[in-house]
Image 1 (cartoon, rainbow, N blue to C red):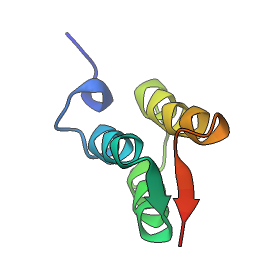
Image 2 (image 1 turned 90 degrees about the vertical axis):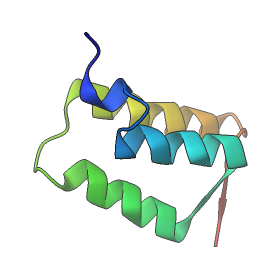
Image 3 (image 1 turned 45 degrees about the vertical axis):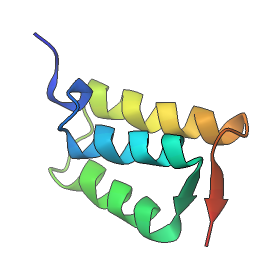
Length: 67
């Protein structure tokens, strides 16, 4: 059984996937991601992996940060 953040209907996974597909992340999307990650006061392993997936894409230039 897979963890909640690895399921396609997970808000964090959905947001990360949309940003990677669009190859951009806006300030509003960044704020949404921050709110989703911090919503329950903890960051579990699957959430951390999703955030790292996005940060890795930004670092290698596959995703740009836009205003």
